[in-house]
Image 1 (cartoon, rainbow, N blue to C red):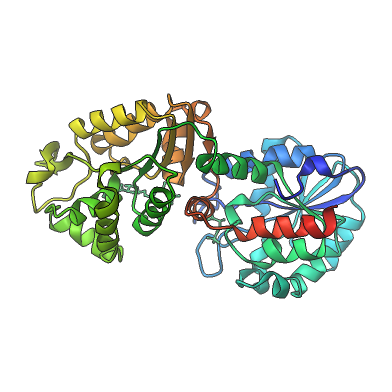
Image 2: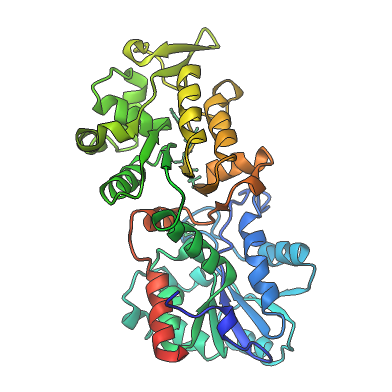
Length: 405
Ligand SMILES: Nc1ncnc2c1ncn2[C@@H]1O[C@H](COP(=O)(O)OP(=O)(O)OP(=O)(O)O)[C@@H](O)[C@H]1O
Ligand SMILES: O=C(O)[C@H](O)COP(=O)(O)O
């Protein structure tokens, strides 16, 4: 690793600013946190800092969204999960925050207010400009060391992510380190054959990933499922039906069909498409070959034959990268494809999952421990898999180069 980690620093007695990503789904009426995965994943880092005074910096959602809210319930959630008191301060860098930190003792945990309440944190900036913001200057006065554990925000070039590392010694937390180690392994050191399963609705991301991993010889094959599969079927010239076409159009992905066609032109042997699909007919699941898809009803899942052949491909893989479901799995009649592929991938030697929906299915099936890694980053994971250097990683490296040695 070209950056510092917790092993490289002495925490004792220090005030440690820790950037985590507790951004989680919240019920808009009850304000209840609906999924605590990100909390659970950051706990090892927070525990590892118990010899210091831990000041947590995080965001929740973005300005303008319904779940852009204060962090009182986040502090309560963390307290319950970590079994230690967590003091919530409704301030980011004002006098109240300064005073609370000044009187902290080693072993205590404090959570500052939603850092995106400060307008500067919502700007995309170059690290050198981010370092000059009030937010970075004031926050950095409040600690001795910065730990960035927020892998979920690693693709954002925002002040706390890229600015603080320029002005303070910064190391990666345990989650950041694990995410980068596991995701890096996909492109170097993972057992072959390497199969990428690309599904769900975020077609542009999936096409970018497919293009990168095929062009660079990272993936041996791609299984295209969900709406991503429909795009590839359309690219192959299949009549996928009006509702599935309309969905692609409404998501703004019609232009992706040509990109899928270009991928098929170069890598046809490595991209596996559905051979059969499932639709709803008279209220029930019905299956058709892709040569005869009914034109008036949407594709909702893989057909059983396709499930079987994709399961075989998964079982013969050394590595699986799973991103996005095979169908509308929220409806039990159309969950078969997703569940069967998830079950098969759990048996593979090295298995990495990006995407919240897929991870939620895996957790619901109780298969979390059978997978090598469930990433906490949606956008960050995708950017990593498209071969981009994440701003947070570049900032960690530059900080270590400057302050670490
Ligand atoms: N054929 C299909 N038609 C319509 N929707 C589909 C189809 N296949 C999958 N989906 C939908 O895709 C959604 C999940 O896609 P998405 O790309 O958001 O998943 P993800 O990669 O796990 O991302 P996230 O991190 O946002 O959860 C599900 O709600 C599912 O119903
Ligand atoms: O959930 C995420 O993807 C991260 O918390 C980043 O959030 P953002 O997309 O609002 O920057």
